[in-house]
Length: 108
Image 1: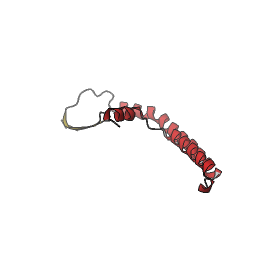
Image 2 (image 1 turned 60 degrees about the vertical axis):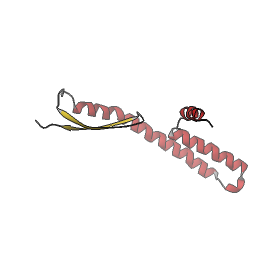
Image 3 (image 1 turned 45 degrees about the vertical axis):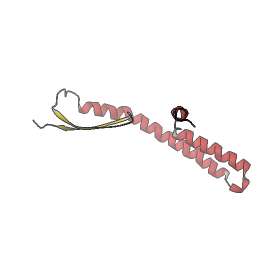
Image 4 (image 1 turned 180 degrees about the vertical axis):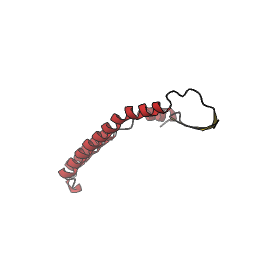
């Protein structure tokens, strides 16, 4: 496969969400169960995958529900603060997705 075609395919691939991963695994195992009875994939196991998916969805929703409150708390830390001296120590970037900035705030 030429490099340009590889990069095009790689860009088109999107990771599955956790709930979608459970669905994908469930469907794949169910197909295997139908085609290969000797694998002993039980209906109970498939049911547990569905239950685990529901638990993950609830946990994701709980996390998403707490994000606004955490953002508000973070904003309140700097409320009323408009000026600080600092020294930029380092910046780390990884493929443009994450930035870690280390600063040293002067004590004056």
